[in-house]
Length: 221
Image (cartoon, rainbow, N blue to C red; front, side, top):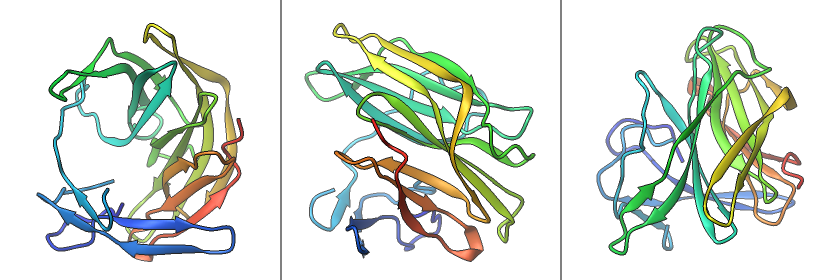
């Protein structure tokens, strides 16, 4: 996904990951173009949308993850936060679908989260979320002072999420916060644990300096 805002700019690409190389192929966006987007064949089509529940004043979302456990679904998303005075807010809720397809969110829980690294004024404590097969919550945290940097970021383990057989969602934050890796001069804003693998696919959004994709072994069970 590309952090583009202007009409006609690329919104989405497919990354084919291999051990020796990665291939990036542009995809067609079929539908109203999102302002800040943070799939059949080579086309992504907007089928429907739904608002998130319990949005707090000033929330700025850059992350969303789905968790499937015991035949149940849960959703996790986070306000990214801003510096020492505004931690991220990690939201979690059960997710079901009405017979006509409408998403239905259950009771929402909230947890305040402050990244262990970076810690500067421009820190976004949660810029993205992914969840491992065993329920570890892996997050990226990032900081920048402008479109030309300098940038700083890290991958951390925020805690764990579980979904019971009756659909109840429980989030437990890690104490102390665990930093899995740091990336000075890069702004990691995307993390995705690859299915059946210990690897996380990381994406940077380095503004005027471009962006990069790499894999790191952060998603062990």
